[in-house]
Length: 227
Image 1: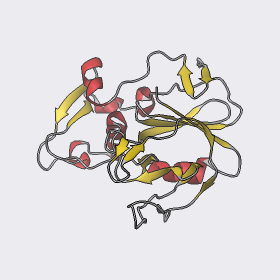
Image 2 (image 1 turned 90 degrees about the vertical axis):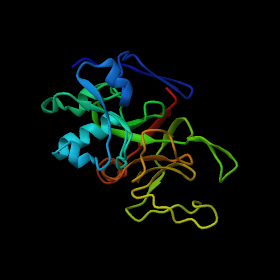
Image 3 (image 1 turned 30 degrees about the vertical axis):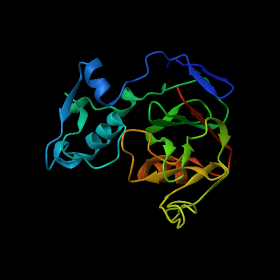
Image 4 (image 1 turned 60 degrees about the vertical axis):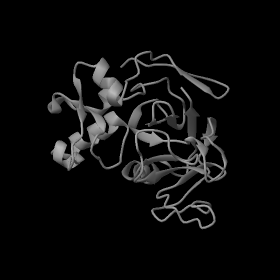
């Protein structure tokens, strides 16, 4: 298998992989295997895609974990039998061995990917990072970019101590803190765009897998980029 290099300069991450996958409605226009569909009243993931594997593929293709509502434009594979999640990954399947486990997060591509120490992509999924400006904070709320290390983690009952403002208690299941109060965590609000206060939201089953199967007692590096 061909390996791609990963270059880190400051907080900017460059892949030598030039054909990273598009997603959502952009993929409808650029891929002959994908079509656009405008959702109707009553449409659900389960109604449009009958089996769990194809539902998972569709959510990754659209970088979205939320329920559907009328008028949304989503991307759909024309041939459901060829729904291979690794074929639409925005990350290379193999990079030069980093020597440690790594979680890559691309904010503009709305995606995370987990690499083992040999540089093999084990799993990837959609994310929603900081939305830029938060009215309740009256300030910017970007996700930090750069290279970090997972500092601590909690289980399914992890909650925010800050949000909602003045109360706290917002669910952050399977949280994994990488810088102060910033964490990767599960959420049922992964809308297909960056919408958080700065944490990295991901689908709950993805956060559970990372928390329980990938992030252990050994060092896990997190690299977050704006490219």
